[in-house]
Amino acid sequence: MVLLPKGEGSVLSTPSFYPTSANTIGDHRLIRRKRASVTMSTDGDRFSFNGSSSQCEYTVEYKTKAWQNKAWFCIGRDINFSRTPAFKYNRSVSKKMKHLLRLGVAIKIRAAKPIDPTKPNTAKPVIRQMAPANNLYGIYSVGDTRDQIIDTLNSIYDMLYNHVDEIISIIDDWGYEEAIVIMKAFLVYDDKSYDWVTGNPHKLFKLLGLKFTKEGKVKL
Image (cartoon, rainbow, N blue to C red; front, top):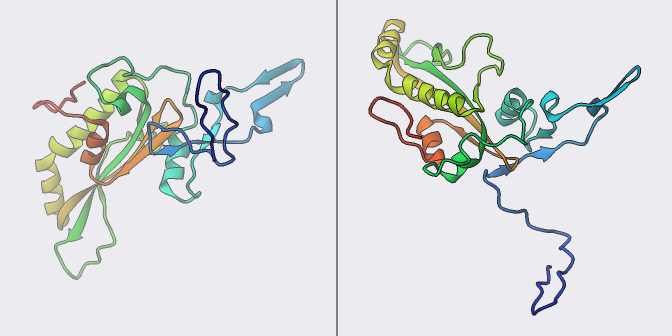
């Protein structure tokens, strides 16, 4: 229970033992780890403190084997929460875009449903993948700056619409009925909250309130 003060000169009551959390930009809040000895380093005559960029100070509430936990392990280790979000002062973007500190997106296009019904449907070979080989963040294409985020969003649109004939030719040659787009997106905001999106990439566009030009470039 929380008692609210009334009248002039009233004093705020002490908070409830079970306070509700404040509203966050994302649907989930990052959990702060307990500070470990790795935070501080002693080396001879030196005593130093490691900043957030050199360690993963926060974590997520998902279990170790969950993809959200694995995604955070890939993209969350060097986020600088004191940095100003890339689109904070852009009046034409959504609230989530204004507070977006980092965007990590993994997209693969796989062949599915063999034409030959006697073939097992377990193998789904990869046709295209957005992240480059030997990528710093594994399967995730990551954007922090304005240009990086725009490039990531434009790359998603490019994968969906600019290689249709090529993809159809490949699945025809490989003997498959269709190609499916598999997306995992992880969005981190400056209030230390986050969202995640899977499946159809248009769900990510809708979440961020994005539209694209006829040329396939994001409108920002």
